[in-house]
Image (cartoon, rainbow, N blue to C red):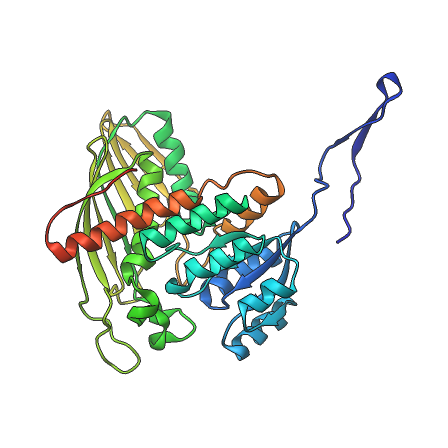
Length: 374
């Protein structure tokens, strides 16, 4: 790819030439392969990579040949139907893994071993052991591993973090966070026949789909770990393409306790019908209350106990009906080009699924579950 490098300094101290690049980086574009051509790839990763001048979309893999060919034709990429063949044939810098949950770990490990940096969708794995293997492989191969937990990059959440870091609200005492929509059958490529509703492919239902996002977001906002959870998790109403109740969770209510004692609740659901999506958070702090994505006009509202208030019009979080870019793939490209460690790395992904797996274990035993921070 040709770059227009139009501005640079030429200094000649003691007869030596020194070039200082002003606007461009000499580093080559990041060559990507994407494994999986489902909705998350089509709505987020593929167009984001395609439109990034510092990235090149080389190939896309999917076992559904018609779908793969369609997406590849649209974005001028080479189709593959076997990810191992793509890894063997193409000289890639990075791979995005956007496949059913049960495939994440092995495809990530294989891609890392092939010499690629990897951005894998959440949940990064379905077991703690697999997540640790992924982290260990990335370290061994000296490659970046990033997890696609995009909620912390949404504009209202970024602004909320900025406000919290000023210290004006003081400590977060408690919180309520929700993430609810009508379920993946409303937006996934296969509708009610989606892998999301197949236990041995998804492993985790709404907990893995929405719960992992919220577990990561609350860790990010609070800036600390959770040490104990209690989960009430069940299947209440969602049916598959055969009209049968799915055998994987569609609703969850999870109570959480942080290391410093902050208490909170996470409510997640696939049965929020009526074309209504709820992805909001309320933080109850020492000096006031913060409302995040609780009204259409202002992404963040801060109500101080002294009567003062702040209203931040900072954009929206993405919904299934109104997609906005998260910047996850762009962030990964920037990290690779500038040799920066991704802020949402493998350990961040591990901490999030550890919370969710602990909540699932709590739901089975009926007892609170301690979370080890080792």
